[in-house]
Image (cartoon, rainbow, N blue to C red; front, side, top):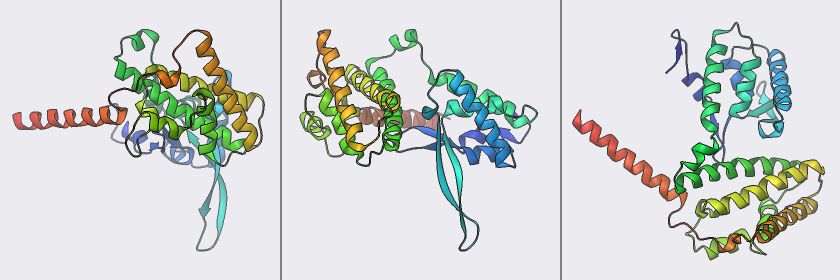
Length: 284
């Protein structure tokens, strides 16, 4: 583990990492501010603004990496105040430390840490081809989680309140009228299983395309209103379905359901790791 003196290690950044309901990691700007030893928020906000500009110049969608929101903090027993906060992706943190004060020793570690970890999340075409079928499923599932998270943010900004209906609009377009519940029943899944965890690589790719194209349409057309957003999602789903049909591909509802869900595979992997760990402990 890389270490600077006795004060900073990679855990400095890992300890303030959060995981959302969709399995996506993120950092909070106010917590990162303290770790990077910026006493004044106004000074750290300048760094964030520079990082956002860098993100835009790199042609990345800022909303995928910097999510601004307000939160209330208590000033005393009765007084409260609203402050600005950001949810940051790993890439956003990387851009922040690149634009931060290089004279701080913790910044040097941050630049190394986030650069390495950001690269670990990237994968080349050659690397992807070498993955097993299950590994490809895990990779595509991770992308759909991230995509759905961003899509929900954009949809919420457009005025969507009922996210279940919004997502079903996309499924109905792509699956010829089937809702998420219909897909769940057709796949004969167990109680509370996730349909996306029970899709093969091709089915996940089709859904990822639907998700990303819907997000782009909502943003490009500045869609406002719940009905309008649902209509866009349904329309995009239908167009993705038509594109599959036009090239003679297999319809998503016809794609085989894998024998094991990704959750089952994760559980088996963890059990195997625990067995190997116990074996090592016995031999010591």
